[in-house]
Image (cartoon, rainbow, N blue to C red):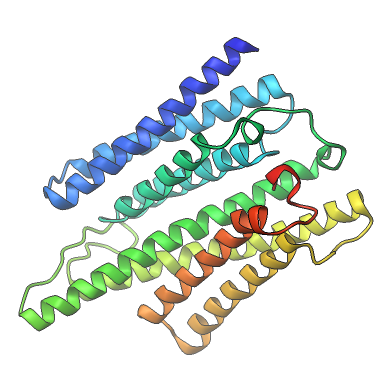
Amino acid sequence: MNNLVVIETIFVNTLFGGVLAAMIFFWAEIIGKLTWARLAGAACMALGLVGASGAMVVRYVYAGYPPLSNLFESLLGLIFALLAMYLVIEWRMKPKYFGATAAPLAFLLIGFASILPARLKDAHPLMPALQSYWLKIHVSLMLISYAAFFLAFGAAVVYLILHRRGQRDDQGGGGTLALEGGSTFGQVRTQSTALAFFDEITYRLILLGFPILALGIITGGIWANAAWGTYWSWDPKETWSLITWLVYAGYLHARLTRDWRDQRAAVFAIVGFVSVMVTYLGVNYLAQGLHTYGSLL
């Protein structure tokens, strides 16, 4: 087992190094205008995905259960989903500037995971409530939805930065920003099209995460009934999951019925991200309930 722990550490370090290098390359692309740096950054993100995958597989081998039972393991799963989604977007759309927000998000997550105390990182025997096949179903769905919302937050931040910079350019008589698009949107060149591009990415990611979050809440209720005899107990994490779902339902309602496609929609997406952070981490430290034992999901 000790050898497997060492191998797991190597994979985690690979994840950390890959994401750190990706962040440097993506910022070099912006600051130094190095066109090749985005490809290098994407390759480093792929290396990080290999590290996350390897660490999860090794943990599964020596722990004997899906690596989704404590905060460290859930962070690995979240990073895995985030990197995988980013790479799909990079492959399909090739969005300039997006990696400069996606990589720091992944870096902060792995940095946070690395400083957790041992009790929240080490593998321990599963408590009875977690000894269920619903563990991998419910927690996986929640983490995939969170990953989509994290990336939607990143896209919304890019949107607001480009919008603000465009306002300064308009006031100062500057030019437009160039953004290279992929096969989905064609070649995106102007400031207004760049904004539409990131608005669309934000929308699509929320549209992906919203039903997955709903499925996560539903499967959580089924699991809760099997474990504790009730589908819903207004536990803090349950309550905040519902609040998060309602926030994103509000975003989609405003988008589809009122055609919110400007900075208001981006701010709405950021509010949703704050709700995700409260749901995922905040209630673990600020509240007590069925989901907060040992800071587990």
